[in-house]
Image (tube, rainbow, N blue to C red):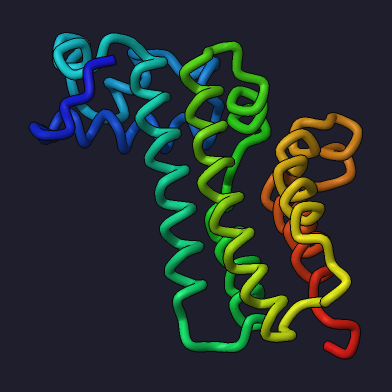
Amino acid sequence: MKIKEEKKTKSYLAILEASKHLFWKYGITRVTVEEICEQANVSKMSFYRNFENKLDVAEIVLKQLADKGLSDYNDIMKLDIQFNEKIHRIVQMKYNNSENLSEDFIKDIYGAENSKLKNILSEARVKSSESLHKDFSNAQQSGEIRQDLKIDFVIYMINSLNEKMVDDRLTSMYGNTQELAVELTNFIFYGIMPRNN
């Protein structure tokens, strides 16, 4: 994978932005290099000067999305507000971050054959699980979430949401992927609050 992080030319950034937009809307499989070049307003020669192929771009886009998601989560958790408000903001973030997200993109990511895409997801899952465990343990110690809650169970369920996002039977119950993502997030996060909240 040609990562030109240090150079980040105008065409490099345009290709990444165009790819992110197209992948989000249509999935990785259905998008062609030609479509990316057209959207980015660059030549194919410029594309291949910056990236080896479409999967090369997909790996970088997925890594950026995963890093941004974790960064946004950590920013919320650092706020000096009540834990239930943090959860509310996380749910809102999930809603905003899944806007116009296509079912095809979800299926391409979570059903990925590509080992590099799987590794990126796996690394992101490990990092987010570590953050969740620390934050939820702290919230449990301060009485902001249920004392009887097994935090490892919550993390297991959050990680299993990925499988639910590609379950055809479940996705058919919702008008779009964003609606399902928010419903699953609500189901998990609001189930952790103390019973009197």
